[in-house]
Length: 451
Ligand SMILES: NC(=O)c1ccc[n+]([C@@H]2O[C@H](COP(=O)([O-])OP(=O)(O)OC[C@H]3O[C@@H](n4cnc5c(N)ncnc54)[C@H](OP(=O)(O)O)[C@@H]3O)[C@@H](O)[C@H]2O)c1
Image (tube, rainbow, N blue to C red; front, side, top):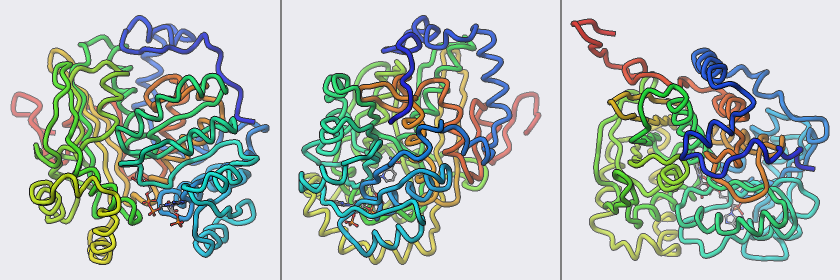
C-alpha cells in the first residue's frame, strides 16, 4: 500500500562525496539544479494548497497508526495529518480510552481508537494489524533497551517512522537495517521538528553549498530554542531530565569529543519573532548522524529555553544531581510528577514559541544559515512529523532504516515538499541566507553600511 518505491538508480549510500551526490541528482544538469534551488529557496513561503497536494489515489486513504496519539506530539501529528490529507484513516493508539475518544472526536469520521501498551507484545501486534504506516510517538526514547515497535513493524511489513530524540535509540534503530531491507520495509528514525526537519535543513544547506562550489562544508551547528516545554506533554520533561544525564557528543575537525551537558553557552540571534537567546550543549542524535552522513567535520547541537531561570535550573541539575539519577527512568518519572504542575503554571506565561537555526560554515569563512520559527511548538511538531509521514506514504523512502538527511530516507526531490508542509504556520522560515539577513540586530556589511 505504501507508495511506489523509487528506482535504485537515483539513490546514494554515502553523500559525503560530492561526486556521488551529483549522481543522486542525475535527473538534472548541475547548473539547472543550482538555478532551480536558488529560485525555490528565494521564493519559499509555505502555500497550504501545495503542501496538501501529493498523495496518489492509491495512498489517499492509507491507514496510519499513531502510537502515542493521545499525547501532545502524537495528537498534534494526527491532527496535522487529517488537515493535510483529509482522506487518510487515522488510528489513535494509547493506553487511555478517554483521551483516545477525545482525540477521535477532534479528528472526526476518519479516526478510530486502538488501546495498546508498548510493553505488551500482543496489544502492539494487534494495533499494527492492517495499517500501512506506524508513527511511533510513545516516548520517552531515552534509556530504552529495545526498538520494540520498529521490530514489530518489520515483522508485520509495515512502514515505520519515529519521533525519537535520543542518540542511542536512533543508532539501535539503524542496526535493524538488514531486517528492514530483507522485509522491504521503509523506516525513518528521528523524524519530527528537531531532530527531523532540522536534519533535512542541514542536508539541504550542505547539498546546495556543494553545488555552488564556494568552499567545503566545515562546521555545522544546530541551535534550538523552545519557550517552556513548548506545550509538549510530561514526556518531554522526562526527556529533558534524561538528556541532562548524558554526556554530550560533538565533533571537532573530525574528532569525536565528549562535553558536559548544558555547558558551552552561546547567545544566538534566531531572528524575527524570537530574537537573541542563550543556548547550551545537549546530546542530540542529529550531531552524530549529520557528521557521518553529510561528512561535515565539526558538528554540535545547543538548546535553550525560557524563562531564563529554567536554563539555570537545568545547568544546576547537571552539576548537583548525580548522572546515575538523571539516567534512571523511574527516578526521572518521580521527578516529573513533582515538577510537572509547576512547569505547567510557568508554561502559561512562557508561551510555546519554537525556533531552529542551522548554521553551516564553509572553508574560506562563508556562512549560510536556515531558520524556522513558529509561535506554537505543539502545532509545529505535528506538521513536521506529518510531513515525514506523507513523504513515506508517497514512496520517498526506500526499504531500510534511515535518518531524515539520507537520500534513501527522504529523497532529495521530496525535501522541498516536506519542508513546505512542515513550515505551515511558521512566523519565519528561510534557507540559504547569510546570518545578517536573518538576525534582528542591524549588522555592518562593510564601509559603514548597516542593514
Ligand atoms: N523529534 C522531535 O522533534 C520531538 C519533539 C518533541 C518531542 N519528541 C518526543 O516525543 C515523545 C512524546 O512527547 P509528548 O510531548 O507527546 O509526550 P506525552 O504528551 O506525554 O505523550 C506520550 C504518549 O505516549 C503514550 N505512552 C506512553 N507510555 C506508553 C505505553 N507504555 N504504552 C502505550 N502508550 C504509551 C501516552 O499514552 P497514554 O495516553 O496511554 O498515557 C501518550 O500518548 C517524547 O519522547 C519526546 O521526546 C520529539
